[in-house]
Image (tube, rainbow, N blue to C red):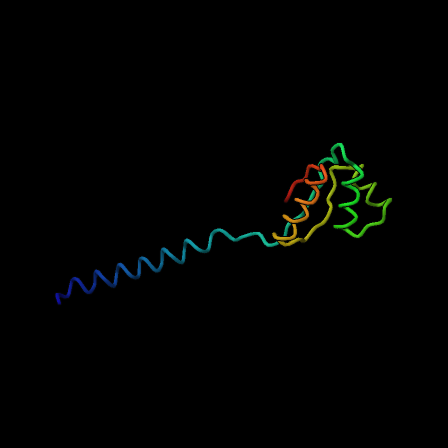
Length: 99
């Protein structure tokens, strides 16, 4: 085997390994999310019920949160939980934002 082809093969593999490692680092995925209630919509009572379920707040506290929108419902949620809770609130008629 000619000497030049060995160097070329080694060079290609080293370059491919470096490129693969560099591509994996820059995009760190967010692990904690915040659920923000933007508006309660027309079915405020249903939204209050869901806020109570999600947060464990009492009736008055949940009502104050919903009526004071936009407000943070819950912080430090996993991606799975924030999507589940957002779907619950949307189904109740609320407008939500995930940060």
